[in-house]
Length: 279
Ligand code: GUN
Image (tube, rainbow, N blue to C red; front, side, top):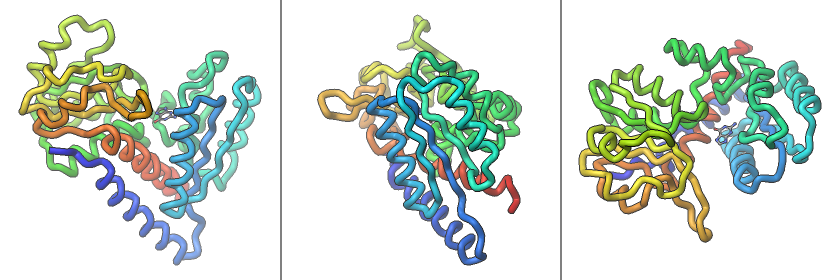
């Protein structure tokens, strides 16, 4: 069965739109997201455009800062400092990956934790690890919302997370654990991946390699979450061979699976940031 992220994301956005209408009716300011992109990576440009467009769709304000590839750390930190202090800005997202000369840790650490809608600042990572999350990173949040929407019970289930990134692998493992799943984290150096897949119930693939997981590894009891997005010969594919989606009990397709849920979760987190201000 398809886990239809596109349809579920529409429900989330409709709910946010209604909330924005209520705020407007009360004469209040609407939430505002600032998106920062450094460089000209084509995929990142697409994501940033889409984030700005979806802000408009729900009635949020947005600000896009498109900086050249050779932007200095000093310039970027100065922009972040301005956005941190700007009362009209609720959420700040710095699109990753950054160009190599910019240290991601320094940039993320400079974000005000109250505006870090990606949930990447160490304070927010710590809160999530302690099950006290302020901002749940967008892709993991979207995955958990989708599983919940389809009433997929996680308690006592064995979940395999393939990938250990700060954006997806690590936080989704924490969230699955919180829901009482027994979690294994595999990564590029894991040797017995095929047998791990065979013995787990829920498989989250966020390894960043196109069609890395073969359809033959997936069986009819699997819940399969494909986080990958790759463009190959003009077609969008995931980290899993698409024939696997039909074989699994439940699966997120690529496109229209996890991708739209990530953006819907970003909008939800922007609303969380807005409400934190308590205006
Ligand atoms: N690059 C790919 N996914 C994401 C995301 O969720 N947030 C940010 N900031 N960058 C990304």
